[in-house]
Amino acid sequence: MTGEIRHRAAVLGSPIAHSLSPVLHRAAYRELGLTDWHYDRFECDETGLAAFLDGLDDTWAGLSLTMPLKRAVLPLLDTVSPLAEQVGGANTVVLRDGRRHGDNTDVYGIVAALREAGAGSPGSAAIIGGGATAASAVAALRELGLDKAVVAVRDTARAAGVVQTARRLGVALDVRTLDGFTPDAELVISTLPAGAADPLAPRLAHVPALFDVVYAPWPTAAATAVAEAGGVVIGGLAMLLHQAVRQVELMTGRTDVPVAAMRAAGEAELARRAANRATDS
Image 1 (cartoon, rainbow, N blue to C red):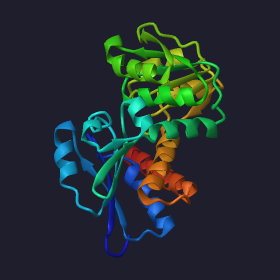
Image 2: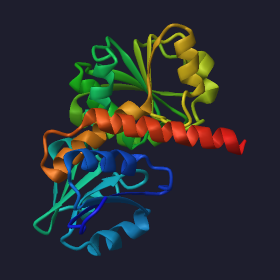
Image 3: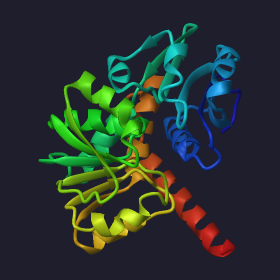
C-alpha cells in the first residue's frame, strides 16, 4: 500500500492477533486500486470499545467487529440496520458524516457460503452454539426459507440471545443441551470456536451437510468426519470471505468487489500459517 492514508478501517475484538480480516480487506483494496485506504487490527474488549470509538477521527470509514463486541456495540451506535436489530448484533460499523451506523454482514456471509456450496435449500437445520454467530445463523436459515430449527448448547441459559432473535424473526426454536445431542437435520451449523466441536465429530459424521464456522486450523475433526462419510462440508473461510465482501461494499461504496482475489489471499494466508505450524511442531 503506497501513498497517503485518507481512509482507514480495522477489525476489533479480543483476541484479535490471528484475524484474517486484514488479509481479505487489503486484497480488495489492492485490486480496486484504493491506494489511500488502509485496514488494520486492534485488540479491544467491551470495556475499551466506547473509548476507541470516541477516539476516531474523520479518516475512519468503518470497523469490522468480532468477539466479544457484536452485541456490546449496539448502544454506542447512532443508527442500526433492521437486520442487525433483529439479530441483536452488529459485526460492521460504517462511519460517515460523524455518525455510526451498525449493520450485520454475517447473515449475508452464511447465506452466500451455503448457496455457493449447493446447500442453500435445507429442509431442516440444527445450530450448535448460542452466541452472536448462532443468532446470525438463525437469520440466515430464515432467509433460506426455514421457519424452525434446533439449537444445541451446553447450558440452555446461554441460548437466551438466540431465542430472542428467533422470536423477533418468527423462527420456532427447539433448544436442547449438547449432552447426548445427535442431530437429525439436513444441515448442521457449528458456531463453536476451534476445537470445541471436536468431541462431537462422531455424532456429526452422518449429517448430509455441515457448515463449520472455524477456518483455522482446518479441517476440523467434525469436518473430516462428515467429509469421510460423503457429506457436504463448508468451512468458515467462505463465510468470512463473503461477509468481508459485503463490508468492503458498505465501507467503500464500491460494488465491483474482487471476490476471487480476496478468496485467493485468504487461502494463501491460511496455507502459510499451516506451514508455519507444521515447521514449529
